[in-house]
Image (cartoon, rainbow, N blue to C red; front, side, top):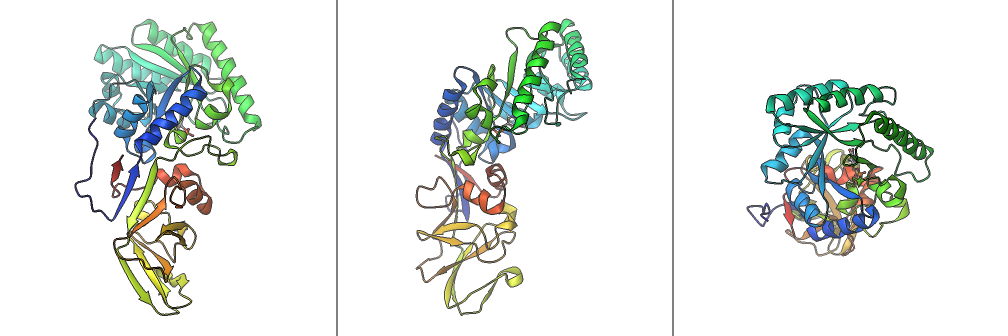
Length: 380
Ligand SMILES: *Cc1c(COP(=O)(O)O)cnc(C)c1O
């Protein structure tokens, strides 16, 4: 297995990704799947953790399939030599469906025009395209509404009869699986079951057809939502899909660190960073952290999020800038080049991505996916 390693070991910042944590998390998720297949969701550069190394780690740990949002992400996997089944589910008119079909990428279709476009690509290529038909059971994003579902099935069955496509999956997605007990969960499951029954009657639900609806939250809390396959994303990276219910035994894979670019003593009353939103109360030491909103350190972290410097928790002091922010470290003997941990598993006392999400009023998905391309991913 070849892993991307940054040219220089000395970088202003890095995101270390512990692939053994991903393998551990896959084992936890396979336990919840209880025999159902696991599709490892690696969209958005594997939630910022790095597409190819994470895909390979997940497959090595027993995921049987990969899921991406965009076709290009699936083609990137193929270009890297990943041959496992991949499903892509966001497709807009005019996209390179020919390339996807040629690369044996499974495609989602929730509308008749898309079935037609996929079938046309398959005819041109002289191949059979594998299609997962999507029903919108109550999230109102992609997928056919229950009213449109029978017509979508007919269209797909016609293309299948002609040999252009194979109906390989019937699927949907939850709106509120991360809110245990939300009434929409049961409603969506009932609508999904009804859609599957309609498909069965129409002859579109053969025994090889994969039925799937569960994201991470559903995988760990709703055994009745497993069907033939689960599609965990955030949990595979070790972040809790339902933080209120604990960590589910998952281990965060990413540690984001930076090295102090400058340290200086300043006098009381020193205004710090743009807008002087932080002012020192006494003589103190300021450390400059070379990460900013261009790297995914949200501007909302200003005077709010915490980091670990010299073994101690400190709060971001003043405005987060494009490439840097400042931390008041008091009288601690911090030096240039010292490591500053923004978030990680928490083992050294550093904040977790969950704490960053909580302090910013968001979810961990946003914290990790935003880490920019300037930050090298380093694999262990
Ligand atoms: C992102 C995504 C998932 C994974 O969601 P998590 O909440 O991260 O587990 C599963 N299915 C679809 C369709 C998705 O878009």
